[in-house]
Amino acid sequence: MKTNASLLKERNAHVPQGLFNTHPIFAANAKGALITDVEGKEYIDFAGGIGVNNIGHCDDEVLRAAYDQIQKYIHTCFHVVMYEPYVELAKRLNAYTPGNFPKKTMFVNSGAEAVENAIKVARHATARTATIAFEDAFHGRTLLALSLTSKMKPYKFGFAPYAPEIYRMPYAYCYRCAFGLEYPSCEIHCAYFLREFFHTHISSEQVAALIVEPVQGEGGFIVPPKEYFKILKKICEDNGIVFIADEIQTGFGRTAKMFAMEHYEVEPDIVIMAKSMAAGLPLSAVTGKAELMDHPQVGGLGGTYGGNPVACRAAIAVLEQFEKKDLLSRAEKIGKKVLQRFREIQERFSVVGDVRGLGAMVGMELVVDRKTKEPATALTKQLVNRSREKGLLMISAGTHSNIIRPLMPLVITDEQLEKGLSIIEESLGEFSSH
Ligand SMILES: Cc1ncc(COP(=O)(O)O)c(C=O)c1O
Image (cartoon, rainbow, N blue to C red):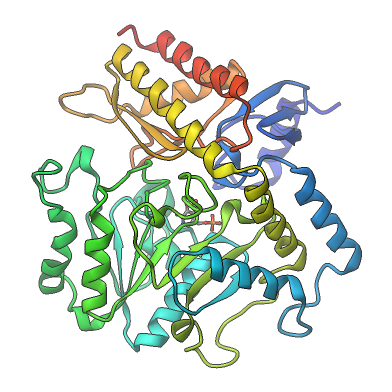
C-alpha cells in the first residue's frame, strides 16, 4: 500500500514545486464533510476543496446525474453539436442570479476563465479598455485574472508583465481601514472614494468594468459594510461602467443566500460563478444582462470544453439538492455557530484580532498583538498543521496568510462541526496561553 510519505516523494519527483500543497496527505475517498487519506485516517473537512464542496463530497444525487450523463455522451463541444443540459442550466442560472431583467449565461471551465470572459464582454459592450479591481482581491491565475489579483507573493511574483489597464482601489477592510477611519462614522468613505479615483487614477469614461468580490475570499473573508456595494454600483451606473460581482467563492449558498450580493440588495450587471456550482466537476459561468452578453460577435466567446454536459448535469443536481436539503438555512445555522465559537475563542486568546462573517463565511484573523495588528502568519500555519494532526483539515487566507477561513461542506453534521471547532480551540491553546 502506498503511504502519504511515499506518494509525497513521487509527487516531489514528478510535479513542480510551484503548485502549493497545504497538507502532506493524499485522499483515498471522501463523503459529505469527511475525507479519508490513503493510510485510512479520517479528517473533518473545513476546506471543502477551497469552497468547492458546499453540497458535500460525492452527493448521491449529483453522482447519479453525472453518471447518467456519462453513459449518454461526455463531450460533443457545444460549438459543434449543442446539448440540452447547457441550455437548461443557463436558464436556471438566469433565474437564480440577482436582478429582474433579461439575462444570458455562458459556461467555461475555471474561475479564472469566467473572470476573463466577463471582462471581455464588458470591454466589448462598452468599447472601453480599463478595469478597476481591489486591494486584497483574488480573481485567479491566468494572465488577466492574475493581473486583477492583488497579492504579490506567491501569486504574482516573477510573472510580470501583467495585463495592462488595471487600476486598484482599497477595499472595505474595516479592521485595517486604508483611510484610518471607523465604521459607521466613516460614512463609507472607501466607496465614495471611487469618484475621487476617477480624477486621480483613471477617467471614468475609460473604465469598462469594476470587478469585486462581495466578500473577499483569498483576501481573508473580508465583509464590507451593508451600504458599500450599493454606493459602488450607483457610481458605476452613473458612469456607464459594468459592475461585475465575482461570486466564485461566495456563491452557491456559502453566505446563506445563493449569492452574497443578495445580502447587499445589489443587482450586478454580470455575476461570475465557479467552485461549488458543479460539486467539484470543472465548471464556471458568466451570467449577465442579455444586452451585454449578446454584444460580442458570433465566435467571439467560447472554448472547446466550456459547459461540459456532465458538469452541467451535476450543477443542475446541485441546484435541486440545495432546495431539497434547504442548504441555505443550514448555512445560516452553521454561520451562527462558527461566529459564536470564534467570538468565544477571541475572548480567550488575544492572538485573535478580529472575527467577522456573512452566513457560513466566517473568518478569524490572527495577530501578534491586538494594538499593532501585526499579522500572526507563523502561528496561523502552526494552527493549520496542528489541527490536521488532530483530524481537521483547514486552509488559511489573507495577504499575510493570517486568517483562518472555514469552508466546510454545508452538509456537515452538528457533531462534526462541534468537533472541528473544538480542535481549533484546543490547538490554539497549545500555542497561545491567553
Ligand atoms: C473570488 C475568486 N475568483 C476567482 C478565483 C479563481 O478560480 P479558479 O481557481 O477556478 O481559476 C477564485 C479561486 O479561489 C476565487 O476565490
